[in-house]
Image 1 (tube, rainbow, N blue to C red):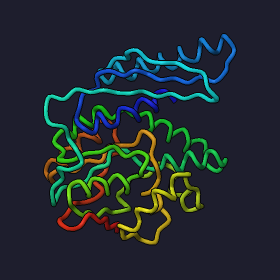
Image 2 (image 1 turned 30 degrees about the vertical axis):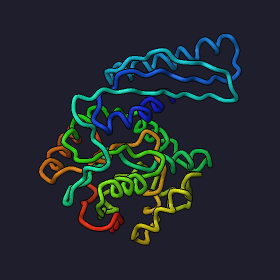
Image 3 (image 1 turned 60 degrees about the vertical axis):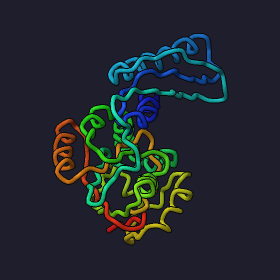
Length: 263
C-alpha cells in the first residue's frame, strides 16, 4: 500500500518532467496493539525510503494520527530545469503513448466482490507499484503529458484535448489492459467511480464492446499519457519497452473540436 501510494503521489511530478525532491508523509493508523503500533509505521517508512530514494527524493517531516482505518498519503515537491510539460502543448499529428495497462479500478472492484482471480489481483498490485521515473525521462520530448488516475484514460485524455484545443482518435484494441480486466468488464464489474467518469461518453464515439467501459475505469498509480511528434514517439516507444514498460501507441491527435473518437 505504501509503494502504491508513493507512485500515485509522484505521478504529477513525473508528468510535468520534474525531478522529485521532497515528500512529507501523512499517516493515519487504526487503533493497534503497542507492538503493531510500532511495527506498522516502521514497515511503511522502510518501503517509503526505498521508493523515494530510487526516485531521487527525500522524506522530510510528516504527521501521524489515529483514525478509523489505515490511510497513507504523501505530498511531493519537484524541481525543474526547464519549462514544465503541461496539458496544453500538444500538436496536430502527435502520437499518443500510454506507459501502463489500465484496469486497476475494475480488478480491485472484482477483488472486493470476490470475482477476480488471485493471479490477476497480484499482477495489478505489481503494476501499480511500477516506478514511472524512467518512463518520464524517456518521454522528456513530449509536447504534453499527464498521469492517468481517478478520471480514467478517457477523462484525462479529454482534459489534454481541452487544454490543447485538439481532437483525437484512439484504437481500443491498442490500449493495454491489465490481466482479467476485460473479462470483469464483460461481467459488469465496475468501480464506484465509474458512473461519474462515464459521463465523458457524451464527448466520445464508442464501439459497442464491453471493453470500452475500461476507458472510464479510475486508475491508482496509473501510467503516463504523452503526446509526441511521430519520430520521437517511435523512438520513445522502443526505449520504454526496452526499459520494461508495457507501453503502447494508442492514437493520434488532430485539428478539430476536443472530442474523442474510439475505433
